Image (cartoon, rainbow, N blue to C red; front, side, top):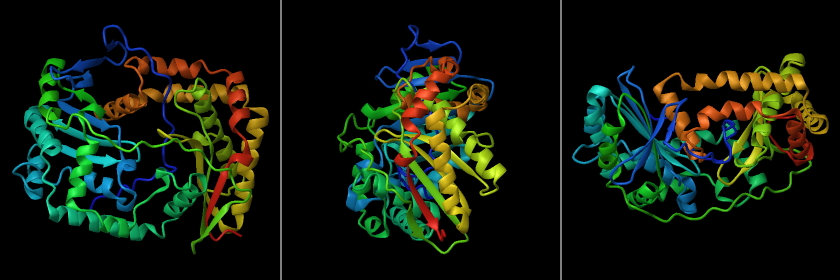
Length: 443
């Protein structure tokens, strides 16, 4: 059974993104550092390519700017079913035959959907790349959408939704969404009732609305040249619909934070705390100062103010962290932690104290230096495999960054000054602006 990826903008596992205003692309469409080529097919499909023949593998990442917000409110879950069905048979191959053929080719292909994006990935050996690209074409352009796997997808999703009803993270995420953005498409979530309304025609229609050539982004990494890739782009994507219309989504205007935490009672031995406050847009000139500040507050894993005090010094939790949520229509500081039921109020108090202190005083020079050293030093580890390279480059494309971003990113981090971070802290680190949700039996 597949792991269910339930589309929800409230999931606080969203990692802090590397983002900045769009950088100008190099005149020769090549980044010397990352060796990114901008390849355009005869039919006009554009891809970022990193051609590397050391390992005979080709990885392809695809993304379309449209996601779960495009599905009707009364049929939530439809986007997940579309993603599920993308490798459940195509052309003359039913589900079993399509899966067997992928195994024969040592090929992996699958899709997913979040609130704003639909994405797919394919990995194949160089030796079977031609056959795998044809399988990819079939999956994208000629999916069968047979009723039996659609019914199976709906059943799996419904079972997962029923199980999630007692999941603290699910309960907290939904409560936080409802508190911050009631009525917004980001706060919607599927139920067994909405899933039951999904028909085969709905699946086909949404797939054709989401996966169109005008919304397509492509990244390719591995043992393939630009000249080899160009015809493949037209072969694979040329049969997709040229355009489509999806509903416009408004930006979230967060509701004022309540004075007290929102409490959802659940008979569990620990209390899960989730919290969220106003954040910063991707293209804001101060984004990188906020990125560094987040590391100092709670984004540094085992080296942050919240971890050092609440976990290490006071022993109130096994883990606590924060991140920057920079979705297409929502920008916020988010975080979470678990603690004993009788310590929940103390943990909330301490989190607010640290937010307030950072806002009033800002970080120290040493904290800034340590954060910048880690964030720049760890960056190359994001590129130690073809799949990681492809995934990260797709994230940069989705953020509308240029091909030279990889070479500029650490300079942008290093350019952040203590004055920058203090200014951002004063603007955003306001405890009264943070909404807290507690799930468990807090005392």
